[in-house]
Image 1: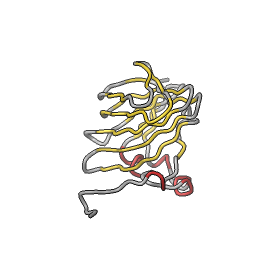
Image 2: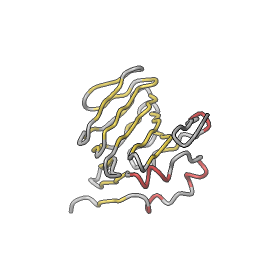
Image 3: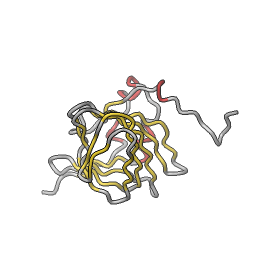
Image 4: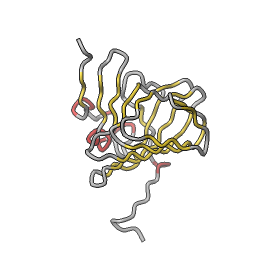
Length: 158
């Protein structure tokens, strides 16, 4: 029996969405659940071969389980069945040479999640409003989202 304390998240019915950040080409996300009350977000990430994310700093804990492929960041590399435990303050640049799929749980404490640092020094904050807005969206629905209203962008230092 399904009630308010239990949900079934059927990610097979959900599209992978391209991550809308410069420098994240070839990286996709499914936001399975963004729970504001618990300050928890559950996602799947897919890296195409040769793709990478921008450098980012965590304002949350992340637990990333590797489903398939291989991926890496500054602290080491991961293969299927391996898990990365990332505490608040972790600062790294994830990439995948061969492609990978991950299941990640982000646990926040104040709605803040990731500060992405672009190559020119611009910081793009991906926090709960952004993540919640893309929860369970199709590609067509995601294309209609006004991203700029959901993120804070800090220009590079002069």
